[in-house]
Image (tube, one colour):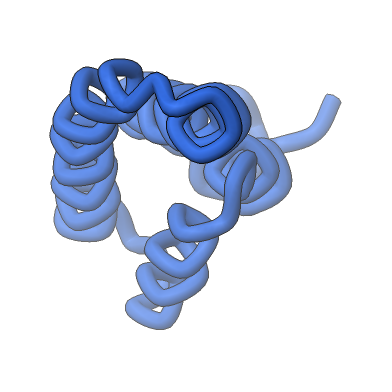
Length: 101
């Protein structure tokens, strides 16, 4: 045991947060500008479904984390809400309940 009373978030949630955050940033910062500024829509046709899968994986990981740990039930709402903000899952995972030090 680490001696800390704070819950530790799982590696599964970490992986899901990185996948969701990365694909959303790529979609918003690369795909959408290419589509609307240069008329290259192929990028969003590929990134859209990949991000959709990553988003669903993240939601599943959040629900899984809540079911397997003693996290407060209200934790789910910011966890899901931050997934709608580009880079939000990175921030949420890092600052939510991961012990410092």
